[in-house]
Image 1 (cartoon, rainbow, N blue to C red):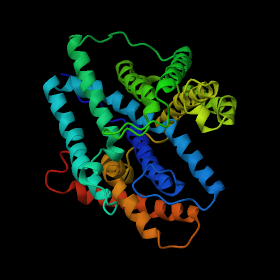
Image 2 (image 1 turned 90 degrees about the horizontal axis):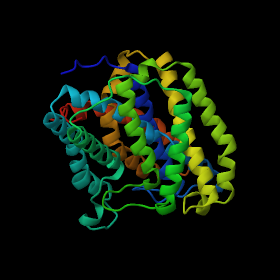
Image 3 (image 1 turned 135 degrees about the vertical axis):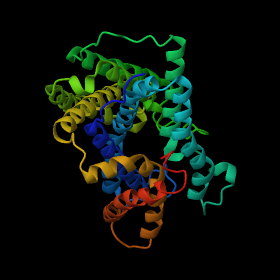
Image 4 (image 1 turned 30 degrees about the horizontal axis):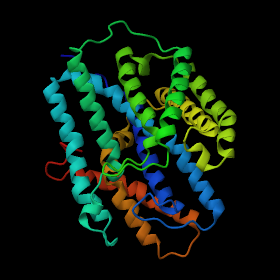
Length: 356
């Protein structure tokens, strides 16, 4: 059995940022007019709708992939410190229990007032990520068992050709996938809202496991972050304008040229930005501190409970006659601290801390 690894505080702090973005993302969805959330309002005008949509699209291009990469990074160590049976039991407890409770209890509560039957309100909601992660973890354990736990023993350095090659391969795989499953396809039952990004989610999780095996997060040179930032900016300048010319019907998929440009943008942007942020956080935010420790310890709980507070804020603010962006700002200012403050008493409930 391996010893528990030293806690990587820069990774924990980055995960807090990602959790904050998830909350802000759903606040923005609330006021974007896009019917992908429990409660939505139409934006005041087209300019506001465009601003919120751009924010959502940029977020979606990378932040959930980053979550899967970090989850993948910690999966091999967790598997190797435990027996396969204990690893799977832990995953079923930590991921399965919140998922089941949300699916059958919390999600129907969020639909109260919608006049839908109970069977139409059950679902994973924002915990689709937890469902996907549970599938990835079980698959990882199955692969390790099938290959009799064979792993690469010689660490492989992360090089620039590997980064660029991975971004290109991901873009092509995403383009091919979206030719069949476009970005506007919603998968029922499992409530998977972003099926067009499945190649990114799977590949980032796999890269996370490889990164753990090779010690990349702690060993790669800091200048790799500058290269990553350059990739993200360059892809935005070169590929994004070409992608958006034809409008959403063209860049969402279906094998169009503009959808290839969009896949080249969001794949390269995701790879580059995640690299840049990892290096930034490793250099500047690799320390706990009381506040950062609190935020890190409660981040997963915030992810699980935030929908309740976002929706409550939306209903409460519906009586205010103020501009849309003002509502977005008020909701963000109120909901974010409320989520993290509420997470502590939620985790103190009997039996909850073992799960959350």
